[in-house]
Length: 392
Image (cartoon, rainbow, N blue to C red; front, side):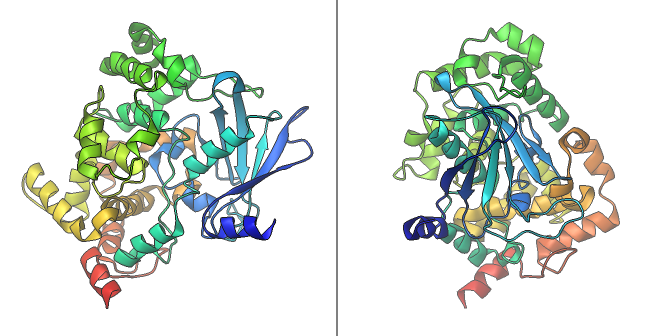
């Protein structure tokens, strides 16, 4: 790598180079991306629930993150297998942070390489500045030792929006099924046979009744089609929504104006865009406030107390809240990098979590919330104390 390329990698910007040889078969290709020096694939790809939704497939036994990407237009679909040599897999030790990401493809690319790189960078948040991670760890030091901060998302804002819509007012196993059916029915097929998440153009032309019948999206059918048409026509674009002059309140209002987007969905989309200053409030938030933070009273009261609790985190409220909740999930199911999509994805149900509120698991998660040492992680201060100690 040139000096300039190395400097870009150190500052948190990925650099890709095409490598010769064959990946999966005739015409296949491979490329490499140099991630930020803090990046660890098994930790950072397995950091948010969407990593177990199709077409994403994390394979813990091999340390491979696989998905089919739709490159748009004539670019078609391509299956990508992402690895980080030396990364964690079953029976192996931790990999080195910042090691090169290798991407094996099921066909060759030419003019579409830049689009593939763009999608991978967005999905893995490789372009999030290291300065923002330092800022987060300064206000909530609990996650610094674990290196947590980057949250996996989708290759496009459109996919993030639709995944969010499919997660509202429904149990998680239904979200899993809806996303699987959307890919099977409307996603383009790669040379290797896998299917991508459908593009806005594909869903813009869908019949709502067929969408409901074939994909089980229920009342969301017409709203998904409306959203797809807005994205397909360029009336909703990430570039305009990411305008830095647009404050959080204005962005939330703009998102709520979209079909099928309420306050929870708007805030969840915001964090997927890198706006972590607001917490999406739902039944899981209530459970967390009661079970882990120990709040009592009406749902409205415990949600108000939860927001007050995380207020010191400033523009990183969501990250502080999310990793605290993620620790609870891991106390129940084991480290997220060990989760298998087809075995574990549908296991996250309200009934399972009610049954999971056993003393050992709840104690572990509450310890993390209070900042005491817990299994697999260093002790630190509480969110409020963390901010105070960071300022001393």
